[in-house]
Length: 458
Image (cartoon, rainbow, N blue to C red; front, side, top):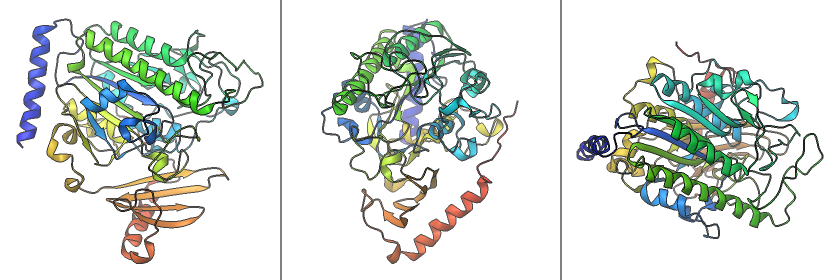
């Protein structure tokens, strides 16, 4: 209770100080903070030195957020590939509930995308008089009628597909893919840099409104291209999908270091505008690293796997003067972000929509909530109907226990004792195997073949 009172007092003090010191501040109401979500693409847990990596990739700006914010060592993407996680972020739902259970493929651009009937975090914040902008990767539908402008965003500059050439902005199917609002609008520049350029311009234009900024970076997803490289994809041309650099590890390092540099640019801008005290910054990845150049250490698996390496990713929540620095091993998922932000605004999402995520606002504000011993274990799920290479995969977790089902069979792990998921314990714990299997079956029954429709209430 003392820590909760401290947090509330901190919020009130921050608001008061900002009102007095900077009348032009874009969000002086402590219960209406600016919100910036920075999503890396295919960044592994072990890629960052601040999350136990070997330090060969230098990320001083991300490290600064980690040092000054709440480091989440048990943060999980809802999907093990790109589109599902993004659907969960937008809706607060499991990907299957949002209707995006798999990758929105670039092939022929035939996939329709996430239904506009899904109520999104951008729509919610827009209704709360926030300026809303997304810059970077959408990957929830190609056609404009399924794009971000019809899902609550005021501004969109970016790409609809899973990946583009960092210079020519051609997707892997050979289509030009750089948009302004609802129209294709070619633009020169290295992807990571121009995303940040537009982000800063957007904040400038927000004037006195609070803003919601979704920075969906392409890095370090392939094609592997550093900021000093050149374009190699051309419209409807013939090219290697991953890129043409020989030294993949070096290129991957350059891409993450460029991402970090531009996160630093944004931080410096916010600091210069005295916006840090009024801005909640969230940084995380959409899934684990995809290829040998990245690292998911110390976990087993990679992107496309329901083992920890596929979905346990680096994450930090930063709000200067409000979120006390520290570390938590509390389980948090991408779908929890929507209800958490709603809680900061003192809004009940039940009046708007149903969500499967939960608010972790107390975790951010109350230091005594941050130890894993104090958490009330929740049961969470992953499901990925993949191709022949990876097979169909499912996982369910409650507390330290995780049940994995894939083409190799069924295995039960205790993550407190075996982070790398190497020892199958199902033979010795039949009651836990039964409990988790039943929970997974019950959850899948609610999905109705992945065609759940959650209508927004106008």
